[in-house]
Amino acid sequence: MSDSVILSAPLEPNLNHKSTAFGGSISTLGILAAWSLVHLRLLDQGLTCEVVIQSNEMDYDRPITGPFTAASSLADPTAWPAFIKTLVRRRLARIEVHSELIFEEAVVGRLSGRFVALLQKP
Image 1 (cartoon, helix red, strand yellow):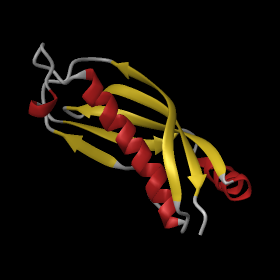
Image 2 (cartoon, one colour):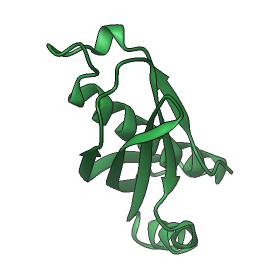
Image 3 (cartoon, one colour):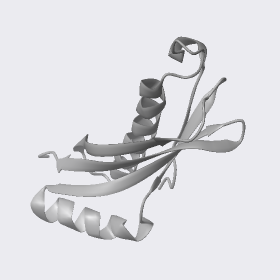
Image 4 (tube, helix red, strand yellow):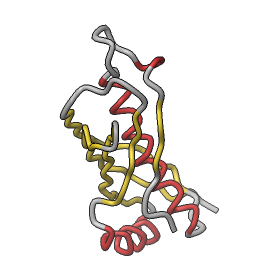
């Protein structure tokens, strides 16, 4: 089971008017890495779910002027078993996932997101 998903994005298609990475692109990469982690972990456990984001918060520490990555992880890895138990019992569960945005080997932003999994009928 994956502990992290790492995604990368080039700068050029994500430029803003200041020639740095557009905040929306940075946030989107963080959300996609976090969503992918939940989705892949559920698939690893044989669970078919719809995963949606409920809420998120993004902090931007410094401008990004080149290719950047997002690395996701569960906010609390010990919460996963309870998340799965709730999902199986109620067919719906929520979990918090974090993504670190990395540029030139430094963390330049952080995303915290709450994701909802809806168990699909077999």
